[in-house]
Length: 222
Ligand SMILES: N[C@@H](CCC(=O)N[C@@H](CS)C(=O)NCC(=O)O)C(=O)O
Image (cartoon, rainbow, N blue to C red; front, side, top):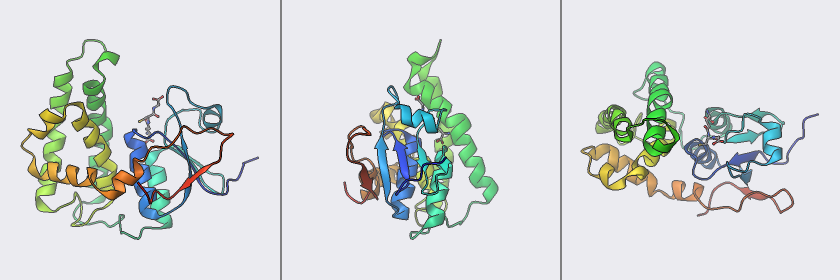
């Protein structure tokens, strides 16, 4: 039998870019969730029981459905409430939109992992993987030249889906990233990094413990 929570339950890990994108979408949707911050090196039994694949984010809806992919959680939230019109479609066709997300997932992210964690791989030249990602950054720079955000003149979901990964890439070597000649991309990144929305979803919470009082939030404070 499904156990039905009072609020949607979000299992999350603060620094995970996939979890960050879902927290940004949930904040935009103004939905309250029960937040369960977990440690990836010490995943709780309850979490693995509902989602044996063991990745964050995971969300349990109030109907008991289990969403185990960040994109599913993002669209679940915004279909319930999208007051800032994050789902607007502007210059990108659906095909282009999906193509950019595939490049992010299939090329940018694997290169980012090799650049950020070279010790996890054999015979890795981390800077080679850093540089392989410049093409993706150049594509974003070109899109951002034409408008302040990637798809529209206002923020939309593709900005939130991509931004946490670019931030993580910058974090590996901030000085090097800041010296790149991508003025539009850098402005976009720094504006998002300094936004109240981002700061609110990066607030630190204690690691979830089922015997303590639950944490409910709509990410409205930081
Ligand atoms: N496709 C998944 C990817 C999620 C993912 O890989 N999350 C990482 C953390 S950023 C994770 O949980 N890894 C499991 C681990 O490190 O044990 C999604 O979009 O939600």
